[in-house]
Length: 280
Image 1 (cartoon, rainbow, N blue to C red):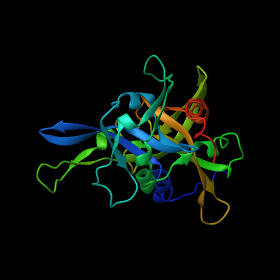
Image 2: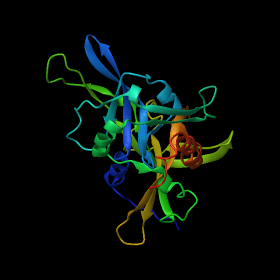
Image 3: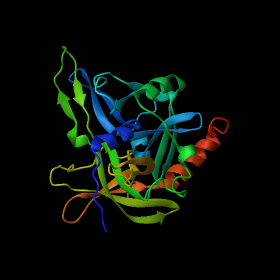
Image 4: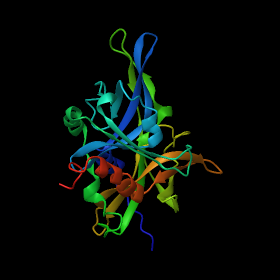
């Protein structure tokens, strides 16, 4: 027997929003600074090392020095604050194939400078990869679950009314959409899977998923043994980095799986900062 349960999207997406950020390149257009969406990321920690999990092609397209904008999706009162990081003070770890494509690898980590970690913690929270690295192989908190993708959607970026002369305001939108994991496979030692967002008649999916690269696929475990369904736990399950159109419409997102996130990426981080990247 198949049982359908309903949980308000806000109750689930708020938990993901605490870890989600977007990147923005800062440019000058018509003598006014502009912010251009440049991919998504997830706040993560490995011991005392705090940073952003993202796609390699997202990180390599950001400058090595100069300011990069940070887009936040949690809360309503912070929308028009300008948040930036200085890339010269950050450190990059990149795992990337010779060519950009569905076979990857396309994983990266941006270590944040110590003086920025405090305000990042005020914006959201860092997902502890060392604490949760056994989640994929351990006992799940519930047998019932759903998977959802979170990431910025470039086509929904819009200019907003300015309140002062020589000011430009931009609105950035992130997608939270449940969907189906399929075609799990190993390519050159990396575990990959496809994710297809669910198309609902009362919700319009994006025509293009540009901007979602570097975001996250979350596995949301559901507590369904009572009359009122609830969330039993959430786990970082993947990272989207490539999109393909499906026959008949819609898209499939190619994602790195838990082996790449908790293994292949964590290993060089621990090797680079061995005294800090230890479980606390």
